[in-house]
Length: 382
Image (cartoon, rainbow, N blue to C red; front, side, top):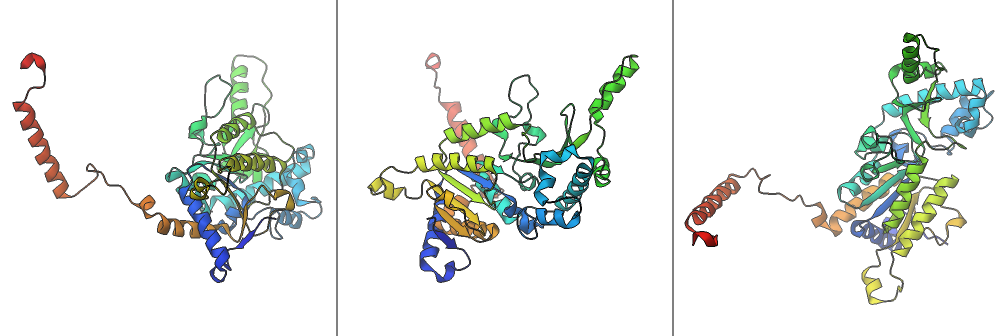
């Protein structure tokens, strides 16, 4: 059974408090942390999750009671078979994007960014389509900065991707015909609001070019939000698989799972593979002296308001019950106390504004040149 640590009650529970502190130390000492997140980390930003009583599924059912039987249906690829459900999908996604546009990253997003800045983040994997990781400063798999233009198999520069968007990005659109990937402009958003799909500008340009040559025009595709629905392949699926396999081979030493119910099959598989790799990094003999010195290694932590199911026994080591923002704040606070050197700003002589530093540099520099001018170091000159 997975032990649950109640974050809110930890102040009055010595065992929970000590265990939570040891997890904070694990974060501080780990060097290759994999973070997996879901919609729960964005709730404090005003963005609803999917499965709670006031989540997106419930909101969809409430807005369209006569058309949508289940909220999940609006996020299934089969919706494109019906013009009415397609129109509703476009309108709903337009509303969702407008609320996301006004949101700012949460403390949890900034915590993941801190892990990256401290050279502890191996990679972040998120189910979220809101792009708040990018806003927090993590280059995502949807960013144009990581796209490769060559003819090779890969579409992404793996090294530069810091956050993998497993379900796409609401800030981008793609063509249903030519697969062009484009930013979601305001003009597209207005059409989506009306339940309409914009024409693809790249298809349009190619068709117009043919017409200018008196050739037959080409078919023009339409744009759709570049998010991945249920029963739909990810356009970057091969690249994401390559990144995941690469990260597993790099021997991650901690796995942090936050704000997800772990209901999606693909995510469950990803988490289990990373958990296995993380546990493999722990010392094989827990009673040895070496193991005691490295008892912070190989932890799998699940931070969520609801506990994981029984299938996660032996996979997840600890369930931290509470808000992800509160846990992120606690970890950072304890990290600063446990390892203050990690937070010291290293000042170089070049960065120093002190007149004393400048004077010292000048004096040392003059002395060196004077010494060099009176001493020869080359045999031919002796």
